[in-house]
Structures are given as structure tokens and as C-alpha cells.
Length: 126
Image 1 (tube, rainbow, N blue to C red):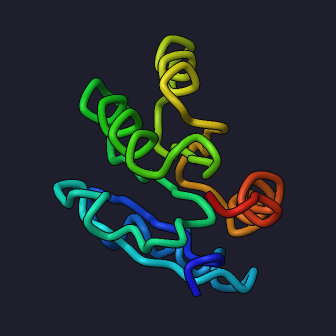
Image 2: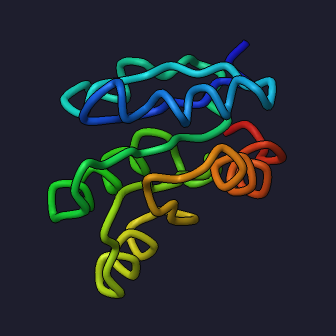
């Protein structure tokens, strides 16, 4: 059911696993996409609950991906950006371009579930 679908976009599928497991424990359906995938091609007509971008390095390429995911999913679907070594500038850029929250990785299951619970679990479907 697309209403519970959360897209996880990651450079490496192993980096996405903790997010996938946490989201599934909350009863959400996940689909892992590669960084190079065109997100629009994987969107169901009903939209998605939200999206998570998992970055290996927080850099300009990652911020550009925030913009692409936000454009594909629409403003009604929350977007979490996850990665290590966030700077004040990178946080501000991610939020400016559409991320609703930041997850510093590596993150515990509890941290992931906390962010997801606030932003994705109760989010309306776009």
C-alpha cells in the first residue's frame, strides 16, 4: 500500500538497512533506491508517506539529491536526510532545500524511530 510506503535513497544498500529495519518495525513499507535511480520512476500514483536520504558523505552531491527527492515526492511528503559529519552550513542547506530533519549517522534504532515517528509516521500522503 503506497500510503505506508517510504522511499530510502542510499549510496549503498547496506547503509540503508538500519533505516529499513526501523521503518518496518513501525509498520511502514520501504523501498530502497540507489543514489543514481530516478526517484520519479518509482513513485506510485498515490504518492508516498515520505523519504529518507542516506548519505555516505554529506556534500554538494548529497544536497543536490535532497533537491531532486523533494521535487519528485512533493512538499507534502517529509524528507529526512541522514549522514555523518554534518556542519552548520550543510544542515542549513539541507533544510533550505527540503529536508524536514537531519539524522546523524551512525544512528541507533531508537534515534531513527524517534525521527520517523515525529515526521513520517503521522505525515499525510501526498
